Image 1 (cartoon, rainbow, N blue to C red):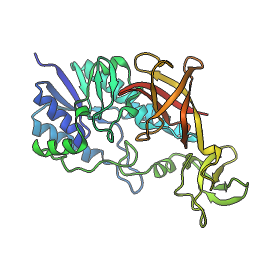
Image 2 (image 1 turned 120 degrees about the horizontal axis):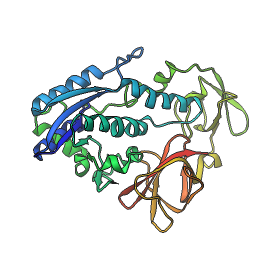
Image 3 (image 1 turned 60 degrees about the horizontal axis):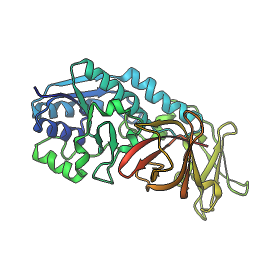
Image 4 (image 1 turned 30 degrees about the vertical axis):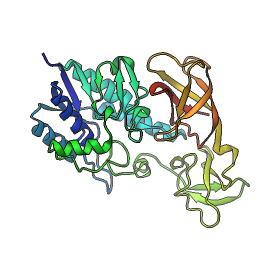
Length: 349
């Protein structure tokens, strides 16, 4: 009897092709749209209805059953609140990583298994093998960075059919299967709200005050519209005119001050030590005997590390072979041994 696989159909091309490939491989496939967010924001209508309809059309085209799971309450509590709390505290959180940890590979997985599924599948560019997480064939699209907090147990129940394909090949497959999503554009902006940017989203939930932008000499060079909106290494959107470009090197949430520099060699912009909190390792904890690499943001270069040390149960420290620019508290540092993603943690100062 064919294994029952519930595919998270988002209404995008990647998940559509995932469902088509699995059906072609003989699995008993059911498409599931996860309704995580439906709230419109001023000037930004939420695209969930359009995405839901596209997902449904794909299911009809592939002749597979289709369901919707409403996770909006849990999503607001686990992902949106996490993001808002992070920004309020002065760090730059990653909601995509939390969504994978709490919703897609926990809530969706548990609900699907209770509903009769044997496994789940998503349109992520990654591979899984015996509970291990491996990098995708397409380096540019590899999404293991966002998946590092998924558990070994969840990976054993998950399929990632796109791990062996490039994005171009996926688009071609979508055309071949005659899927309505073949030419649909990538969704930009926040993972759950569509086209809205992070600043526009935060403005709906967080009260902010104007404050000074101060350079490396202690001179006020401009005014910000809320320290919460600024992230380490940021260059654009500072509205500080003339001369050399400024880079954000820090901020003080209590004083409502943002600190910048024109000096690209400013020590506050560069780090050789990465300190992590909330560490999560998919299989075994890493050791110095392994040749380890670290990625400090999605699509950033993989950097070799010379030493990794456990400070306590959830806190680790790694020494890099070379300095990394704009290490950002709240973002994640994710570790690799060859093409295996080991896990990682949240960057802290």
